[in-house]
Length: 44
Image (tube, rainbow, N blue to C red; front, side, top):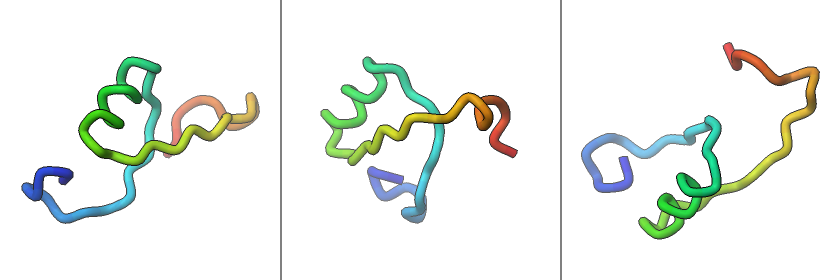
């Protein structure tokens, strides 16, 4: 997506600090949002 090989869209998921740093180095914006305990688990 970032390199133009797929259409741009919003992406959600979880990343550790190293993954966030790698994304930011590639110029990808990352927003960290705390997840309440009641919402932890599968997103779907």
